[in-house]
Amino acid sequence: MAKRCDICGKGPSTGNNISHSNHHTKRVYNVNIQRIRIIENGSKVRRKVCTKCIKSGNVVRAI
Image (cartoon, rainbow, N blue to C red; front, side, top):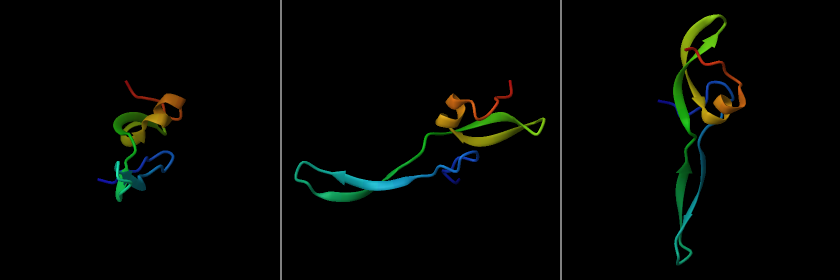
C-alpha cells in the first residue's frame, strides 16, 4: 500500500535518528494517511488522504 496522499501527493520523507552519543541512523517519517470516503465528480469513492488535506477542506467527506 503506497503511503502517498491521492490529493496533494505528499509522501514519506527520510531523516536521521540521533542518539545521545550523536550516532546517526536512517529513519523514515511517514505521512498521516487516512482512508476515507469522499465525493469526487458527484460519486462517493474511497481515497487515501493526508490529514492536512482533510483539515484544510481540500476534500469533501461523504457521509
